[in-house]
Image 1 (tube, helix red, strand yellow):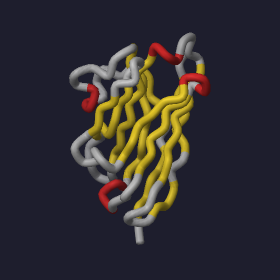
Image 2 (cartoon, helix red, strand yellow):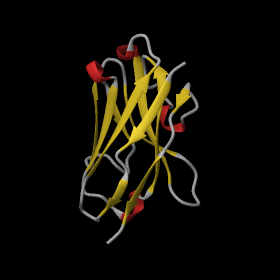
Image 3 (cartoon, rainbow, N blue to C red):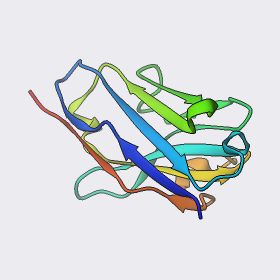
Image 4 (cartoon, helix red, strand yellow):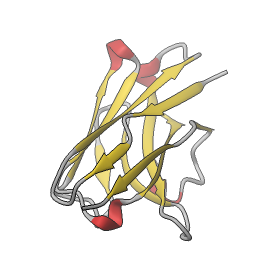
Length: 126
């Protein structure tokens, strides 16, 4: 069974940076999986943040585009989310999830994701 472990959350300052990692285990060929990052701000619905396909295609929500960068290291079964220019509104629990091969046209909804990892808390505060 596929398992995902998100880490790297913590306290960040406005304008600062954090890097999240999502490590997958139980996968036969990690290269075949698309990985998405999602977040749930306090008191709000879950939202899609970014997704990277098996071919390296990347997708971002409008709220994080030009600030966040998603990347993958297939040798380490890991996907990263580099978060720069942090804003107070980035405060949320961040989750990673998998889909097969592609992120899908509605990746941001999370509906197509098959496996979800435990979350990591990101708090942006001055």
